[in-house]
Image 1: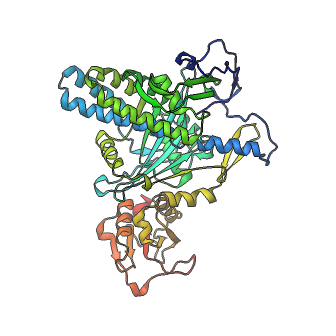
Image 2 (image 1 turned 90 degrees about the vertical axis):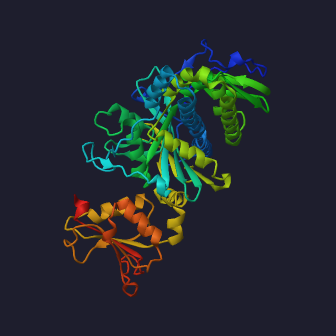
Image 3 (image 1 turned 30 degrees about the horizontal axis):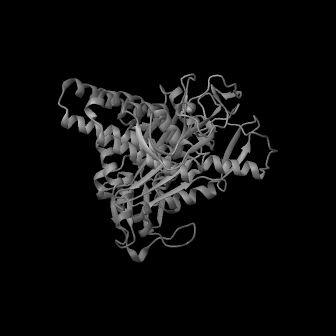
Length: 511
């Protein structure tokens, strides 16, 4: 993610050599004032009156929030595939004790144990954590993964997730979708109040002793809280680590179709520099490969996306051609700092295999753009994006819709069968997060007489997948799934229309 700041432009030399892509230590860089710990605040190059967004600011915002869509995905794909592929290769073909010890030690840093609890979606820092319900991979349930691109800088005490992408994968339907979230989106961070969404990771790391899951845990809870979607796993990468991985592989050879010139490439010290990559077959080191993949001023987001795909394919071929054994220790050492995920090696392998079966036409994307978020200047002068949830959430629901749930289109009524206020609403929130369509929320006529949560199907067996998915989401015993009389279908209080399924929250939900 680019940082604000100006620097004197280097001479425009279209024939610059590869060395010219390095930052010039003699450049004078002006650093903006920090407003949040050591990280400078995102600030526009001009100030606008409150409530007014001129055309230039509007276009700048559009450019800023559009460019994130695939930047992290490319590096995460590289890192995770390398991690799983190299580990599997070494275990099978390299029965050397020293190498196996290195693999075990390194993969323990990459593939971390999932944390079964995360910060509560509502309430203060001491609110009861939420227990994570993971999808059943054997039953081909949908999986949501939060991809985090970290902009870690050694001179700073913290790291923020400057890129956040939610990837939704449906193994049964063989479809996928991606949601790109702009870093400056103003949201509620569970237990910490309102802030930019990219602060969630840092806050989780800062208070990791009291935050289940640390930075990734709080980032996942923040997305769940604001977007009403379930996040099952995370994967994170920092871009400096990516450079080291490429260097450990001996660089990467790319056939550059046309010269790449970017006069405003961002530097780690918040300034900019000029980069140039000549056309033709180029062998790039990690630093230049990252520049080639991240640059956006030379052409457009479409051009950048094409370059990222090109780098990914080139690295894939590089891994096939190189002698993995001779580079194994170096690569694993670099991966330990570059990539981290709570997906297991086998799960990453399953996703890699599945990715080959998903047609490109079956991948949907959504980026929160200027139509769904308004650029706003807060009283402290900070520029943020105020989300319009009335526009965002319907698009989210459509993007992450479970095809089988959508096909059945079951109308669900949620009733509170306990004497404890709010239990029905809590159950409703869980089901909405899992993409169920809730048509009605009310109290059961016989409150206090429901020791366990039950599901009653009034559809005459026409909504089997929805019933099964409800039982899985709520951990309902099959004995508590009932079949109602289709001639006595209840009607929703909200619109007077019939419902298909009634879920009554029992006393077990209170516990």
